[in-house]
Image 1 (tube, rainbow, N blue to C red):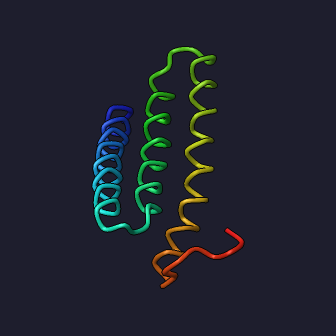
Image 2: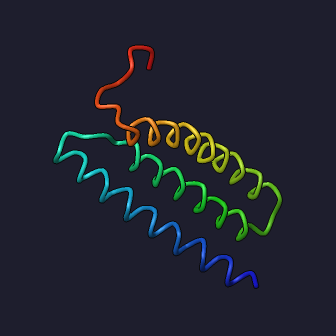
Length: 97
């Protein structure tokens, strides 16, 4: 069971990194929004450190990974807000953001 979970997490990290880099390059060439690439990279960060947490034999290593997971989750919520804002038709940034 553990190997299935780890394999799924590693595949999701690879897909997230691929989509994040592809979205960044596409947005960079067209001068558009970077929010989707940030969303994918944040999801890959979270999944990667969760996989690393599952591989830790000691509690101290797992607690270190949890701190980095929280960074990924925090970035996920912020990036999701900007993805919704960007894809809902906002062509330029709001004055308060």
